[in-house]
Length: 564
Ligand SMILES: [Zn+2]
Figure 1 (cartoon, rainbow, N blue to C red):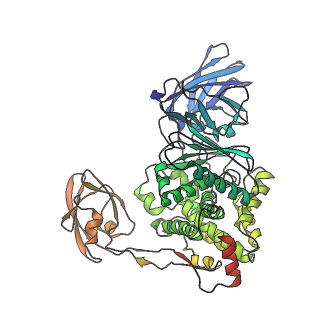
Figure 2 (cartoon, helix red, strand yellow):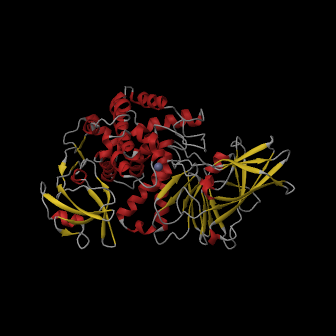
Figure 3 (cartoon, rainbow, N blue to C red):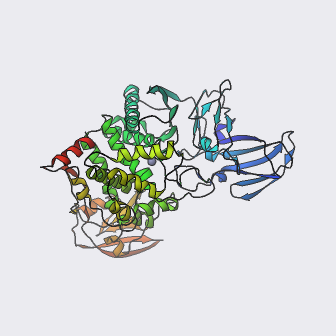
């Protein structure tokens, strides 16, 4: 990285002990945890290969991410290439004159068929940069050099290089650190103390911490987190930590990414490791890996003393709301959403917005059902905690593999001592409406599932206003806007004779009535036309959770043990 302002990493990859006339040098098409084909090979240039003596070796590309080198009898092959890195995102790599962030799957090639081989990485930081933060093990006596047992470990260990601030701390005698450039102004002491509480609550749940060292890597402002075996990459805006609401969101976010060290990195569906880096790795169970991680955010923060019972209810309510109030819940199950996650493009289409759900949200709801059902059926002797501990022990520690869909269900049913067919055969795999009140009642709680009118008249067009132009960004399913023929991309010039721009669409709608027929003046591809929309009334359900007035002793005991 001699010229960070050009955003190119220069990579030298030396491999030894290879046998065969040719070798395939490959760059992954995706990185675990971010279930999209990223085609990192698009950023590679200047690929060349030579033998130990520096004699050039011929090569050809045989696939988008494969460089086949004719190595003959060369005992070692050295390939060199450059990688363009200028996307500041947890699943991409980034290099400028402030810092470097390496998503290893996007930078480091491997030799086809040799993923199990050990790897050693030496970083040559830009002069003046003094820190390298990564979960990889440092090689003693060799500066900025790290070892990985195999390429799965390497690809699971992002690297931050620069002059970042490092906040070190210990939990249960195990070193942890929080590293990031330009972290901004916030109370470091409280921040670290709260992180410790989250880690302690997780260790309390699982019985141990499953690593020798753990690194939180903050890559700067933005949104998104990506979990790894003994680290996590996070982007967030430190200014958000200043408000109580922003701080709560931060706690949920960091708790989520951290708990993935257990759920998904170690407690995992069989499809999620070892990975095939060339193509999609399909599973119907991301609702477990992501949704149950969302579900545990609230529980862990409550056990850590950072969230009240009401805070936990609010989190659950918001997940259930965003899934169940969306038209996507009519079309897509949690299992289908998991399987088809690879189809989600960066730019969500109108089709995706209206006909898909998030397995994070639906999965959190399913986690709630599983936990309460297990607690109810076992007379409050078992819970989802027992399932997590069992899966961790039986599959990760004892068998060192992921579980099948059937094994996951068996583990849940063993804890419940009863059939969980309704959850596994209906709610997880179909779009059948979930009977939340039945399950919440197990903990002596009610949940408000009554559809209620939302204030104002409803058109059902989501818009963006830029430079005085109001453009439709989404047309809600079965809405007045959809029936009137409005489309994404239409510019709304006026509604009911009132010009948009000076007033927002919402402001104009606030003065109109349900059932009223209004003229919508639009411009579509330069042609102005008028449509008529009959304004409707939108209903939504709050899913607010509240205690029942006279719980039975079992209901009261379940609630007391579940959330303090
Ligand atoms: Zn996650």
